[in-house]
Image 1 (cartoon, rainbow, N blue to C red):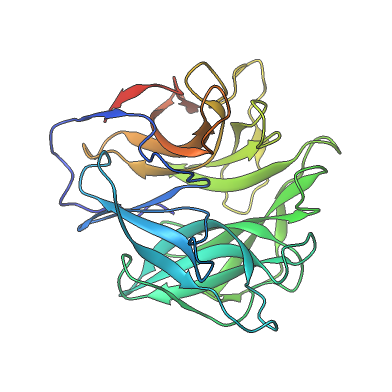
Image 2 (cartoon, rainbow, N blue to C red):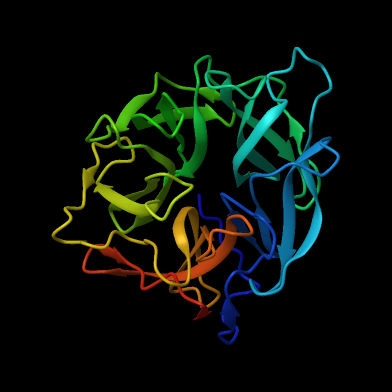
Length: 311
């Protein structure tokens, strides 16, 4: 969900060179606040005791490491000891809530969604102590609608990137409890098509459900989207004849671009897409990158991946 700060809006544009982080930073998420920007991504500390790095920036160009969001439990009974993936943060009241994926033992079938909270987005978060769903699920995306209703989008089914994965959505009573059963937002069209990393952007009455698909290890990974007039769907995929190159796909500057988020540009009018992508030689990991995103004629458009972008 997009949370817009105000202090940074209205400043002059700045040119950013991609990637914005030089180390492996998959599944990046950026939170925009009045105190600056905070970036979270998939990852574990070198000593294996902490997970989900937090970086902060004043201008989206220069980032400095702050801390790790999660302390990894030492108990073998804990549900969250491995695979700390796809963090996303929202603010509700005076608290910040971090949604993330983790696993009990690092094997397929043990990955679940969790949530942790903090009073400060730059400091460690306190985990709720249990997973949100009893069945395997990954890539939680919290979305707050205009009326204040909280929804959680996520991926289910095999969750292994080799077979079909579908995107579900559920209305929530609060950050940790559901008001009803999850519903299928959009099913995958083929048994061999994997879809993950949902993110919703609402523009006017339209809900844009963006997602990544393909093999994350190859240049086939890319971003597509679908539209609906209700957060619960049904979502209609944008036909390939209307959007033949998808929203963001591989080029000479970045391979396998995907698993993104969207924030408002500092000018308060445009949008910025933050995603990860490999270098052309697939060396050095998946690095966080920034691209401009436009809404034109009821469709999303991006010209990236780019080496430089002005925001």
